[in-house]
Length: 137
Image (tube, rainbow, N blue to C red):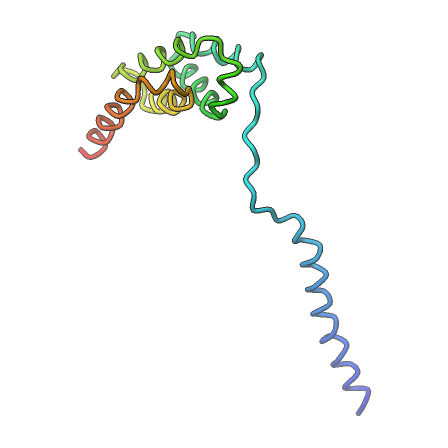
């Protein structure tokens, strides 16, 4: 009879021990912090600015999308003329022929340009109003 109890106790001890070991090994990998946004390098910003001047609207949209990934204070230090980029973004926002994806990425990039983009906040609002009207139809 004691041999049967010994056979039953062994799995009962191993299960909690295995569970604790798995938790102890896996918990350090779990992190609730969001990783910081990447810091832009000057050569990256130069490439993005060159892509904004491209003739294809999809390339402009991808460039504005990349520009929107960076934080505003990082862009202030690197961008030489944020007013020019803001003006190009507003030109894309006002162009009805351009795809909505491109216009949306231009609006999000414009929101990251700080004071240069703050002047054009009514243009972003008008774009969003027109977009919601178009989607509600």
